[in-house]
Length: 157
Image (cartoon, rainbow, N blue to C red; front, side):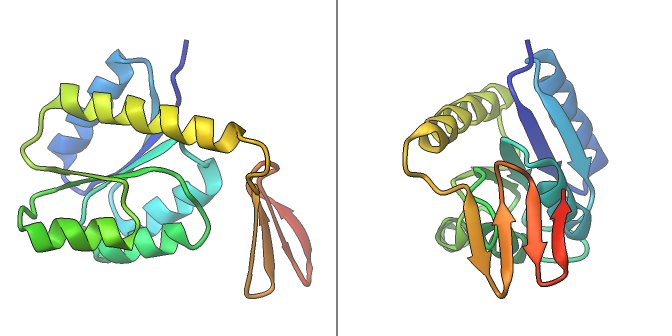
């Protein structure tokens, strides 16, 4: 039984393979993005249950990715980064990340954090009164029905 979908936004192929193989072993679906632009696109298109994000991406800083994702989603974001300075960790968490692991990291710990965040996020989304619709800049985003409404009509994601 599949436990959810994880989006991995990481440019290092070895780390992509390590995380992907581990997620497969633990029965998670996963998507891989090697850059920020593709990661943001997949976050909007596939509505993953968790995002694992490296801060050092080739096309955009991971902090900007967090801000862009937070503009349309509350999906849990786990930072996996070589940046070990406390200021970097605090900045990422303040930007909207939910958790932070420094490289090198333990895969069992990463899986435990994924399980915990999916559990919390699922409970949050199942509570009565939680809006599954966002509105900003003339756009209406319906997360549950995976659609975007603009002045030109409604588009399915």
